[in-house]
Image 1 (cartoon, rainbow, N blue to C red):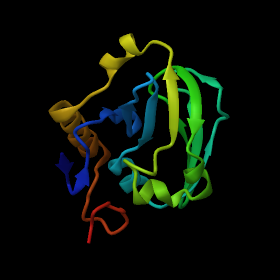
Image 2 (cartoon, rainbow, N blue to C red):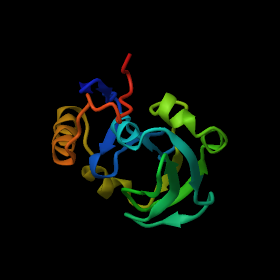
Image 3 (cartoon, rainbow, N blue to C red):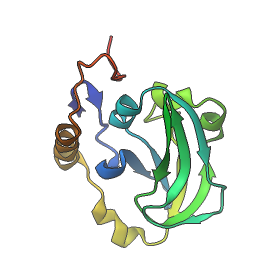
Image 4 (cartoon, rainbow, N blue to C red):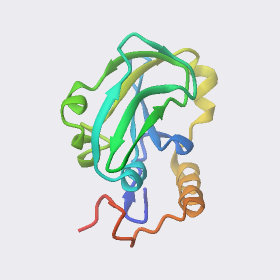
Length: 154
């Protein structure tokens, strides 16, 4: 799946309002990471400081802080749960988020409080693409803007 040259892999779930992707792990935990669109609008990421492993976070609360060119923002969780593990490779080398946001650049793994109920809040396939297309429209996203770091651009 692709919008404006930005990839959104089919096998993932998405939380467009958070610019996050989620992957269901075999043990019931969820891996979370920043989408290609999130990387494009934030630009080069200089630091990721996660909350400590084992900490419980509520929905809409921060699981860490992301620092980029001229600002920093809280990475908010789209669901409640316990942070099982943070990606230490990303803490040491935050550029991994920009370089491989759907692979080595994952951010945290969370054990959700109630995945059976929360799962319906996340999108996949054409529903996810439509939601991101609308988000881009509302954000005034212009992939031709030289200030945008669009992943996959030659």
